[in-house]
Length: 245
Image 1: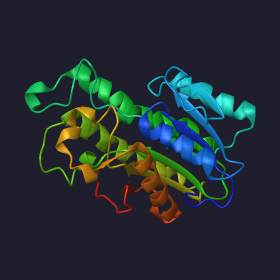
Image 2: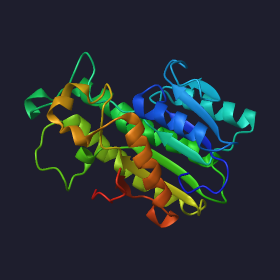
Image 3: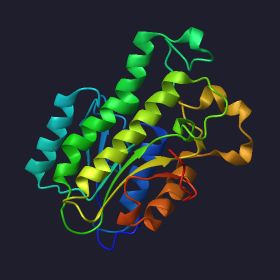
């Protein structure tokens, strides 16, 4: 599964959401010996298949440090970290349709989750990955975060925060490659998935292009399996195709 020859020791960040939960179930059931730690902001709500659930708010560096301390104390040396968190809208705000709707507090909130938190995850979790063998640090991005692919404008905070995440992934990959030769550090586009994030906009998506969380997870597992360390720092879609930054 995902190109690993032996057991997977995974940490799934944001396992309460649809895609994160799908990864927990898929990895747990793939082969004997797989271990899956799941995180959510409250420490609850992850699938029961998780071997352990930990409360982690990726905008709170101390909670990420607590996760690392717990993993180290338990002897968990993860070879797979997947960040499945992200925010597009809340009850208080939605994606901006125009520059007239830009608001500093909204921008800050979106960037904290979609970009800043990803950098903090890399800072603390990449160092506990094994130096030898295949390792993966992946984070869910979005095609709309591609600067080269932006032809419609709008959704300013979401687009910009995902573009910032992509740059952080690129930078993390370059730095980590100096010591983690087998690391694949990538941004991943899961497609449009039927989750709470996309629900207000799902009616506009053709049915064949609206994936269930399990479908998206299966596609991304295949994409990850196809990647080698030469792909580190890249941005890849659910179908394995590279996306321009």
